[in-house]
Amino acid sequence: MTDSPALSLYVPEPLARPGEAPRFDHLSFAAGAAEVRPAVDAPEHELRDMPYGLVRVLGETASAWDPVLDPEILRQGLRAMVQTRLFEDRLFRAHRQGKTSFFMKSTGEEAIGVAQSMALGAGDMCFPTYRVQGWLIARGYSIETMINQIYSNERDPLKGRQLPILYSAREYGFYSLSGNVGSRFGHAVGWAMASAYRGDRGIALGYIGEGTTAEGDFHEALTFASVYRAPVILAVTNNQWAISSFSGIAGAERTTFAAKALAYGIPGLRVDGNDFLAVWAATLWAAARARANLGPTLIEFVTYRVAGHSTSDDPTKYRPADEGSHWPLGDPIERLKEHLVALGEWSGERHAQMEAELTEALREAQRAAEAVGTLGKSKPSVAEMFEGVFKDPDWRVIEQRRELGI
Image 1 (cartoon, rainbow, N blue to C red):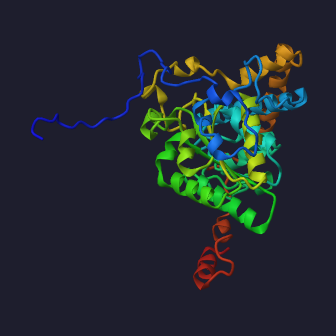
Image 2 (cartoon, rainbow, N blue to C red):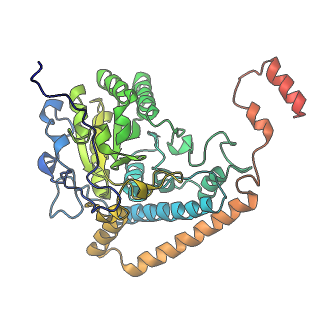
Image 3 (cartoon, rainbow, N blue to C red):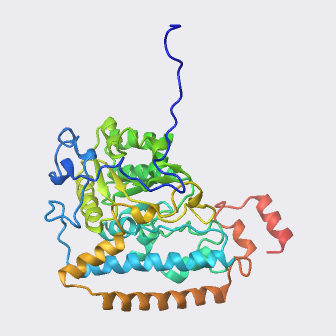
């Protein structure tokens, strides 16, 4: 034993830090086994190579995964993604102007929330992270209402009970957003199990980031989903960075995040998250399995977080400043736009006109919200703190309300 070398602890480090050239050569973007679209009812043991390939459609000569969508559906998806990006850019500036306390952007990840929102049904429930506001925009949720919630003003639909951007809209299939991201999987699995127990038809979709796969919530949720064949799609958004720690801290150097499904006996797919058509196709495949009582699917969406983690984060402190522009899978909006142009179903002129229309609509919604008030200029009634807490208020709540004169 005295002749053995001393032990050393390995700590993963990203391939590039600020001032260095961006590198993504540790990632594989080959289609591999995912070049073939398996039958929806294929048994799990025939799908065990799928997590090591990459489901792609856009840019491929021919793809077995092509959902063959009507051009009008593609235009609607493009519009929702552009609207999401314009909305976030505008509200990010509002934060810098002191109009809200906090904000987060999904730049570069818009295809995921938008495509899944459009592909799934009205009776399905999304358990979101804070980068899928595109889900709400794709379903026509009021932009003005979203801004009221961000400003925490008198017309905030959540009455000041949530941080800005932590939306909740049950009628739009959008479960109350939580900053405790790991809880999304457990809640999604529980909701799906309840739906199956009642004999309903709705399935659940849960989101987490790749960093959260290192938490116990992830593994507990997969255990329940597997054992009880919960009708749920479990989506891991691998955007390469969890706050300031890179994906290797969660095990990205060892295997794909989709491969974590193998230990639980459920299918795992690895999907180009910047490919609107691939996201749509993989979602429908997993949804069809869930609706056929074949249980859950784990999907890893390979994408990149272009912006900072939040307005409290400066990504130039831990990664190359131009890393986003070198991301091999490109920009989801530009890729879908170019696809439509190639089909003869879109043009640069129509795109510019759409951006102008959406920008003006956003201005109007922001003006209306600011007329109500921005952060600290307007807020919900103090009486709201007593509502929605107890079904029947006890004597202490009654006394506190009396003391406040409300």
